[in-house]
Image (cartoon, rainbow, N blue to C red; front, side, top):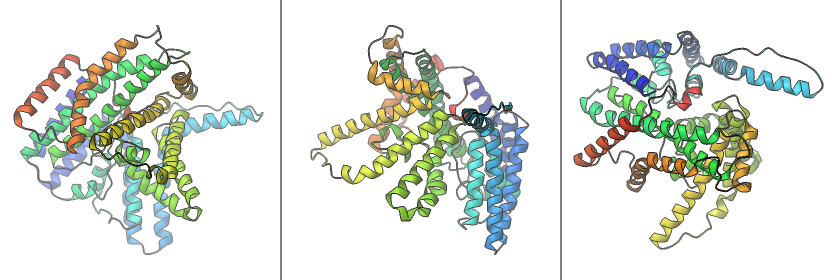
Length: 480
């Protein structure tokens, strides 16, 4: 993957150099062509699929804005949503629903053997589908005016730094930046932009990909599972998926900075969260905001007369769909249900938790905060065991059970080696994130003095070149 990333940087350089010398109109045209080439390089057939969504949503947005008849407006809104969800449902969930429907029918005493289709999942389809749906909804609710430029809208959907794994930026933010002339400054390239690309690459290729080797090793043994092994596996995967996805988001932000775009922050120190709500305000922020605005708020508003039951139903429905969004496996749905239960429990218990007195002395406040962070980090890790089960929910429950029923130093796995390996790949990340939290600034390293910044970059580069993983693996969220 490291080699592919270098190839991508060469591709970006080939786009960026002429980009600097073009006016706004031709910059957008260049980015649209580059985005199409970038996506077609993965599988050229799916570029046509994206343009089906682009074309339908572009014209639906115009018709929604043009009409004063609410029935007509609602018709084009539903047409847009139906087409997008149909495409997503067919490519991502067809076999899942057919397989589960056939199991249900067979369980009822009938015998059917449906033919499964060999469907290849288009990369990034969940991300760009949510972008297109949010566009027509925002036009319908009059939060934005539809763009008259087909090229600008096509670039909004297909923008190559974001198309594979987000962030899921909405038209009110990204399309506005596409439509307006951008100031491209050399300072934005070699300072903040390059730093974000460099740090994102370090998170991915040094931390995440090395932890992936440990996590895959610890998750693979057959039952009975060892509780300590499962705990270490959960730790390894927790930081693997975080650095993998946060690394991609930082690279995307850095690329945007280089070209004059302001890409939203998608992760804000999520493992410093002390409760479920705090976690989802820090983790995959663009998805959290999307789910809150387009799923939770409408559902909870329609059930407002039900009081706390309406809130609970809205939370559970939102996170079951969040789990399903991640993939067509039951373990993802169970993972979503797990978070739904946590959020409902927190909403119900929050009045009682607010009555717990905080320590008066500063040192005890820090200790109490540390205890809550450590406790809730383990709550998060339990969920990651379910998430990582790869379609085998039974395996996930067996692994979680071992944490309470079979927790001992086993001989089958070199636990000491795995623990030391994780520490060797996480120590620098831990120091950086503690300082970021302490200073309340995710760019604190970038803003530090020149000597410290140079030493930090040299250390990261040494670790990356000496221990970075040059594998064929891709970013985890590409599969979603």
